[in-house]
Image 1 (cartoon, rainbow, N blue to C red):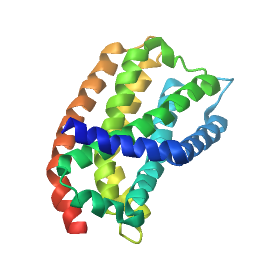
Image 2: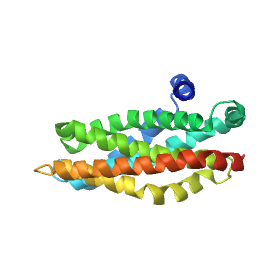
Image 3: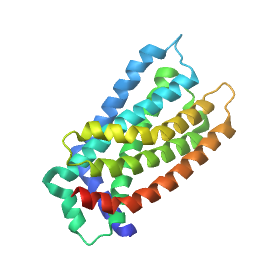
Length: 226
């Protein structure tokens, strides 16, 4: 199973390395969002911790949607998804490989966005790097687990980009809230590490539940879509 997951992931990474399309698109959009919000929320060269956390996770959510759409478009081009489904690989391996690729693309974007937050807003994100990394990693896994399933399921729909946002955002609201609250607690004048760790645990439970549900639902949804 792990070998097959690695093969699917390797395929996505090789294609992205050759085109650099998904990460560059996500990064461009995320940077634009950060720059726009910086003019709205900067006051005397700094922004409040709540504002920085909200801007950071808004940029992650919106840029992640672009990445999901483009990743699904790749599988639609040349009917690549059908070819994967016709292979003898377990459906769970296909899903986990695609999800792992999305997670890596999003994390690469988040590294730049987090660094830009430090430059634009003077946010001390590196002061508690372990907690922040936990929030970003677990939040990204939850986002990718749900988004990857829906983006592949809606691959042939005419209005797939609009439908993806409609079905995705209501479900990932807990991820954005938990990520924002956890990040905000780290940016307070006296960081609330207990609150940050609470939201990390919340995201871990969320990931376990929704990854399990996605693994169960992936094959019937994708086969029905095809």
